[in-house]
Image (tube, rainbow, N blue to C red; front, side, top):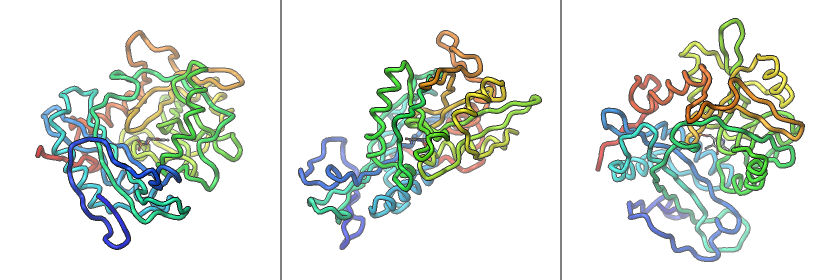
Length: 335
Ligand code: PMP
């Protein structure tokens, strides 16, 4: 669909996947007025296809658009695009629990000008790809590198928006993580470089256990981390499984100390693409530590008990094996 001030949103159409023709002076290419989303459609064991929380992704895209001075795509437009594409493409989703249809909505400034002001023309596109989880079909434990040199977001910046520039700025730190033998970078808060915020494409949860009962802690939405839809789902789901949750700041030192004392028994990262991935090793410039069982069993998923339980509950809902008591799934019939 296209947007301009005279017509608002117009010309929505479903067309075969293919290249775009862009003017070299397209605003989005120069000044980064580009926001996007990532959501998934799953095939249930009975064959029906449903999309996980498209309304929440529509809302986050609207919030991202506001932050970048872009017109908000109405929820109806967002959902109509999801419905049309998933109806069309769902035959490609294999009947394999690890696979899903990843949907990538993108909104960008398409006006041809070099003027540095909010653009006056925009395009909203939705494309789809068949995917597995980030770290392969069986979620293997992840080693993380805590960067103390780079920040993902600035105070007052765009950290809470899902905008393209946030990802461009994080690539160098991600490369550093890989050089240190890690899979992912962990970001600290941009002001004190003390509080644990999130990972490259995932939010973080810490499992505390004492006296046989577990609780979860996740960093609060400070404005410099992305409000993950999976994070939000787990905040609602965990208490129904008897696992209380709190949104509370955790410093890097405390993370290390609580692992050493055994108070933290599991850590996991969550996101649409990454699903739920146990974190088993943390490296910082001052040394490394392991969490829980440490290295994974050969080929297996070494998720801890609480991580495994949450993961089973979430994927049970997504795969239609458990009741959708939160009304998170939007069923889509084939075209
Ligand atoms: N943080 C960042 C930086 C991300 O890119 C993502 C993926 N969108 C997440 C967290 C997790 O968000 P969600 O659960 O909505 O996929």
